[in-house]
Image (cartoon, rainbow, N blue to C red):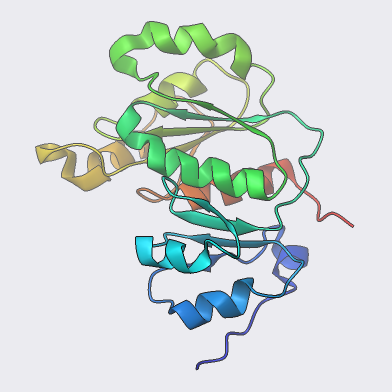
Length: 211
């Protein structure tokens, strides 16, 4: 079996611990990482078969396609809102929120508050005003991050998703909309990259490694 070289110092260097990317990993690889450790372990983009392998070693989050072992205690800090435009965007949002939760950063999820029914966003605004950073996940036209950025002081991390048909081009239109946002303070990650959004939020928050 190929020996995996775990990067124990990554968090002290970068503020973000190593996370296993599931595709291409064998059952033996996953067990090697998750067995007999007291350290935080997180795996993302897992298949159903990989989640079955890890179910005795970690907590499985099927909709997020993630596994977590030894999550960090939740810290006393403002929650990070994770918002979706539609329900089809939820798996990507859960990848972001599960990553942050595993690392001890509290999150609050708000689903299905897209611009097609703008009153839904207005109803949750009081819960967003204390945020230090906000993650906004949207497919189709990808307009929601710009709207949120125009209402909050906090920086907004836009996550385009591949939700949408035809000219939505698998998330390319949502990506370009977010990149072209007229609301300042929007950072954009790759299509469907909830994990990347969580990592950027961690860096913005300056999360320190617990003793």
